[in-house]
Length: 178
Image 1 (tube, rainbow, N blue to C red):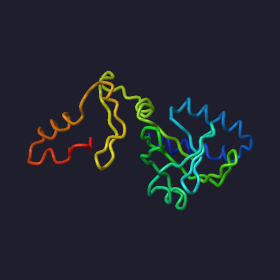
Image 2: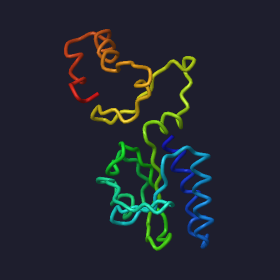
Image 3: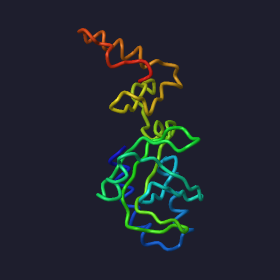
Image 4: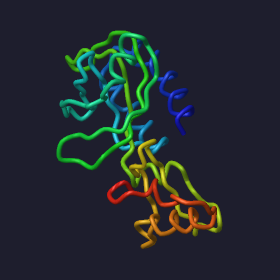
C-alpha cells in the first residue's frame, strides 16, 4: 500500500503542476478518491498547513517528517491527527511549488482513516474471517478491523507469546499499548 500510494501520487504531481483550471483539478482529485479509496487529499505547505479540494484549511501534524518531505524531497508516511477527527495515516510526496485556490503548497498527501485503510487493503484471507492490524513500532494500533468482529488482539498476542515459550513473554504487551 505504501509504495503503491507513493507511486500513483508521484504520477499526479505533473498533472497538478500543468493544469491551470482549478475546477478540473478538483474533479480529477474527486475521481482519484473514488478510484483509490483514500479518506482525504491535501495540498501541504512548508509549514504543515493543508488545504483540501473542498476548501478546508488546517494544520496537519507531520512530526519530524515535514523537513524530510519538504527540504529533502523524500516521501513520507505518518500517523497524524486532525483536530476533531479520528487518527489517520498520511502518505505524502513532495511536489514542485504550486498554488491551488490561493493556497501555496510544496507537497501533496492522501490520508486514510481506519475504515478506509481496511477497505484499501481489501483483506480477504481465510474467507474474510481474518483480522488485520497495522502497528507502530511502539505497539500502538493504527488500523484494526477486528473491532467489528469483537476480537481481542491482546489475548491473541499473549497466547502467541506463551506458545513461543520463555520468560517475559508478556513484556511487549503493556496496558494501553494495544
